[in-house]
Image (spheres, rainbow, N blue to C red):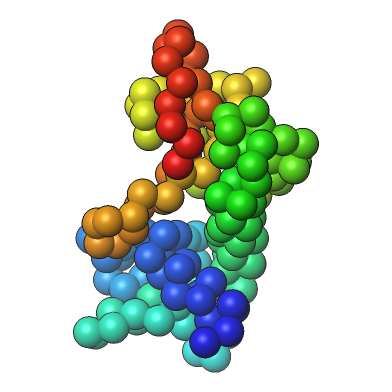
Length: 159
């Protein structure tokens, strides 16, 4: 399986709204799952539903959601591999990723960044990083403050 196929499968899990949040037209693939606009036959992108569920995205929405998720996953890979980030010191590459992710999340109309540790919305000036929690099904993706949550002197273990 190619990386693009993996990314498309990840979009279905992490970026497509739940069936219950969609209209019948969105669930049937007639309207975009993100913007709700009609998707003419042959013009949309099949997001890989199953069991009678046929979510489609319009090309514009698909591209912004794909850019957001690609940035998120690339940053998460960096954090796992970077000794500086794993030590809670945060490197310049993570700073660049935070800027790119913030911009792509805004274009993709993603919800505000909320820290999975302290459950508070991350302020614009605060450092944060991706947090992937495995072990459940599906794996959960989210964010955490980088190393220390504001007002908490304890150092959290890096994800």
